[in-house]
Amino acid sequence: MVSWMICRLVVLVFGMLYPAYASYKAVKTKNIREYVRWMMYWIVFALFMAAEIVTDIFISWFPFYYEIKMAFVLWLLSPYTKGASLLYRKFVHPSLSRHEKEIDAYLVQAKERSYETMLSFGKRGLNIAASAAVQAATKGTGTGACRTATRRMSVGQILRRSPGCQPGPERSP
Image (cartoon, rainbow, N blue to C red; front, side, top):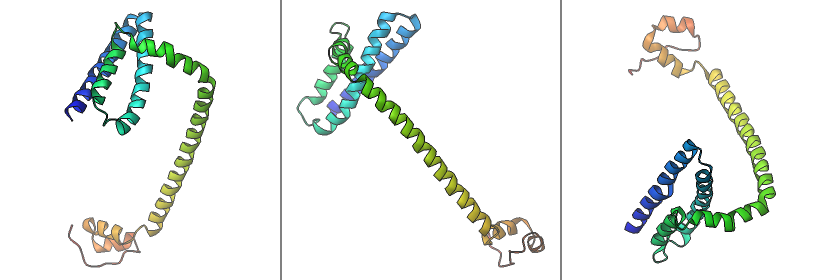
């Protein structure tokens, strides 16, 4: 449990907060070399975070799992080892380059499907809301509306305004 908490803290501070600030500085100073370094880091770190979801579920029982994970994040970040740059250049970039067309096609297809799905859900939601409004309007001036009105109006005013309301026993709020 302690290893898990320390690991989360290390990943947060050294894996996310420091690189985020360093990325900000690279963008602000317009240093292309640093900008490229941090872009490579973020791509590798995103893949690490995606893999972490699976590994946390299935192999977190492994001895020193969290310690290895902390060391890996520090290795990725270190300017001496240039771990993120090494992984990006040796594995990530070649793999993405080989599959770039398939990934792009999949993303376009996913965008189109998500747009169509959102339109479909929007239409369904509007239809449900419209039918609920129609049902409420047809039931409209039922006893609930009369009770609300009777708190503010006299019985004569209620009967003149809403013929569907019948006088009944008053209910206290």
